[in-house]
Length: 489
Image (cartoon, rainbow, N blue to C red; front, side, top):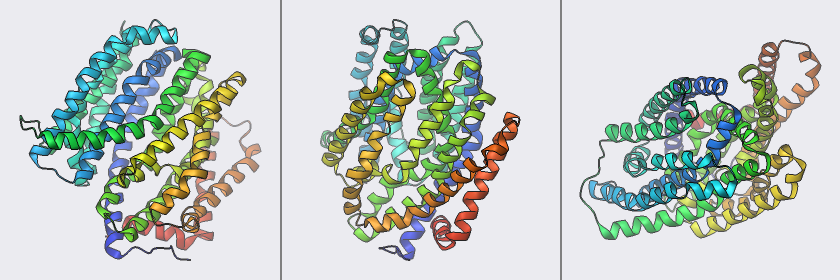
């Protein structure tokens, strides 16, 4: 069977080069940064109680949301404009700085009000200190935009992992002092500042006094629409933190944040390289519907091939990972991690929506879908919160289900892709992880009574063998097409 729109060799080579570069350097980042950061993170859990992670998550709910949204919106606005001269990049810096400075002051002043609202007085000083993490934001826009446009994922990965590693080391050092509760705050502020500085030095992009009011207005207009449309949807995880913190206490929220972190460590290396591609490659494709379709099919196939076994496998070994790596106080992490990974199996169907609509400048449609996500999330969580944290966490998957049913068909139409083509692109991976899951369930008796580490290793090996064997035996041509998208030159 062939895809609806077969990409020409030139288009396939562009996708292959971009994904290969991002993937190789994300793997390097995983090997050095993620594993090092993971080790540091696990060591921090040995020094900090779950409450510390919970209080930090509640304080970071606002600052993280603004930082991520503002950075994404501003970078995407610059990339969409496709102008990378010094005057435009300097204008972007000053425009973002003009917005960030008052927000930083407002966040610092609002700490006590926020602490009263969530009934956690210890959050106030953390909230104020985290406002400093917003200061590096304007400095990161221009270098990141230029490096993404140049597909310089090597540069992004190397400097990102260095900043993460150094920030983690400092945090770990502080965790062994009398100021241990400030370790996470210092780590966040230092990591962001180092990343911005290292990226600026590498890209040789520094703010000057040049400023173009017309360009600033245009950039802020586009960035504002992206910020608003992404912001409504991205506020979901932060609202989840607040619901868990208020309903179940900071200790339970701390376990949830640890589960999120473990999930990100295990799967980000598989998903992030491809996530970075959507806006860049669709923007490069321009108005060519055939090129958009080719990009969509190839990237969707790769997402399914790589992330599904990661999520399903991690769900099956969540108990072993929790027991091996964490203290007994973090026992809740096992069920939380399994639930998060189970929800993650919808990633190939819904994960690209926001990036695609952003690249197509469909911010109005994106805002509508984001508002739908938020409404569905709140309704689902408050409907089941009385049944406990596990049920509430399962409810956070409701927006993904709604998006797959309602938003996905509209996105497919914009990308000139039929539903049957998407199914052909992702169904082999779903079948393979289904075989993998069934095999692990039927062989569960083999793992009973084994040492925890032996059970972990045997499940990992058996799952990988079942997944790979299913693809190579039943879907050989599909597998080779997915691999060729990365290998194309």
